[in-house]
Length: 271
Image (cartoon, rainbow, N blue to C red):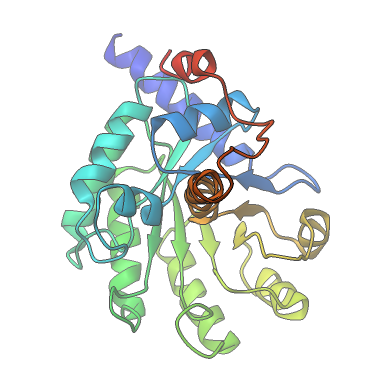
């Protein structure tokens, strides 16, 4: 493919991904994959875009999440995704560095694989939050290096500590001003606070799908534009596998599992 054609494809994919965040009344449901098979299966199920989960990628490599040790695994997975026609966004934890130039170089490398977005968090590996000006500098460096890349700026103000809405809004405003395309507040579930954040920050708001609600429709009505699942699907898959093995050991027979893909279906995912 020529450079011109490659650039045209990148621009079209970036535009398509961005548009998914602006459909009236319909937030982007962005499931999180941890390997090629999970991403391909989700795409085959009709999801228009896929994100990665740093928890799943880290755990599959035998490494802890959020400690900066899975940069190589993350890049390897992105390159594999890039061989297909997926619209995919990559969870890069905190960028694996506090040097904005290093984070921008990583973002450029990911864009070359075909990634259309990155998720960049301000949470520290062992607690605490990155100073907002440091996180903002990373965002600005990414947008200068790769303007088309959708930067989803995550703050962990509702994840690691007692929720502080004022700090949340202040941090998100700094990330918006640095060029973020969307904002993400995992752990935010209170409808009144969601509405307050939406009103204060006119960027697509990403939330985790909360167990037991609010529903996707309720979140859409509050102005949420993107809903993701984080490491939940990976944890469900792992739990189901262990449950099946334990059931066979206990009962001598496997329980009925009607939704298990066939061997042929899994083989087809490689295509």
